[in-house]
Length: 386
Image 1 (cartoon, rainbow, N blue to C red):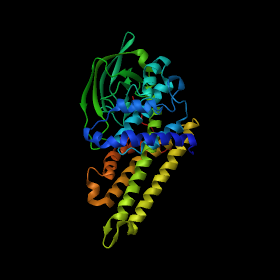
Image 2: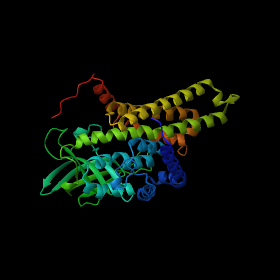
Image 3: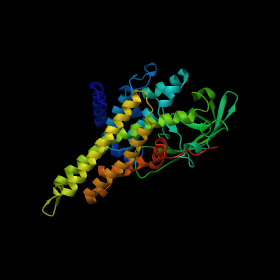
Image 4: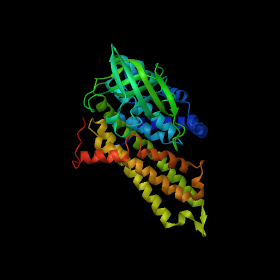
């Protein structure tokens, strides 16, 4: 895959916006442990950046997924992890299934305002007892006339304290665990919803993360995305784009970390020479940059095949696995070269060290990715679920 002039112009526009509207405020938002999502998303919506690959009929750009990939990569220019993650939730995590399988009525009510930046969305999958094991979630919806009554909990939900709606994966029947779930659009101001707690984290501080309770929340059945019982399948498809987004959005932040470390190493005097004069430092930084480029090639190949309509479960899982591990490796190695300066809160490298740790947990832990790969390679059998 190779970016065209149009891809590069989108990245140029986004990086200019980041320099003017986001990076000057990141330190303040990190300290506050939240950022003004509605304000930032509206400005992004005005630039046409929240629905590049979404249908034109609902305000999107009607472009292929490579443009969303280019945007995700440019989001790595933001000097923290929390804000780009929140934007990625809006563009690549809580809206793909809605755009692909939602009714026109549902897309007018929820997708169009999300693309315009008038509404903030979140994706409700993880629960206190079901994170990586999506099939094990316990929240449920029972039918009452033309409505669902939803009860349960969702935890670790990005954007949820500011969100206007949640794309919620919930059990809608008592059938087999892979065929009893549906994705339902839930307005977050509905009676019975309690935003119980803001979860404090060791990183991604500018992104709000919530524990949400649902107590007989009444939602029309017409708010269901697509067919009843197909939610698990729809969510697995959403995960593919989420994992490609994770890979693309990590590239620039890792490149910046390496570049800043090189600049520091060239200035840092040690034992009559600079840190950069040490061959060990040279070789480790060269190795890290090589690994970043290898990840880029994997992500681009997966994106190209995804645009062609092919199933990229295996490649997207590989990219997600590699992203989490490489981000940790880059941040840890570079922090070591910064020494005591790297162990300070205001250091950009230490921020990547904290923020990047989530990459091996969120969106499917490393071990889940390895399990998927073992199955796609034919060396592990899928356990029976009842």
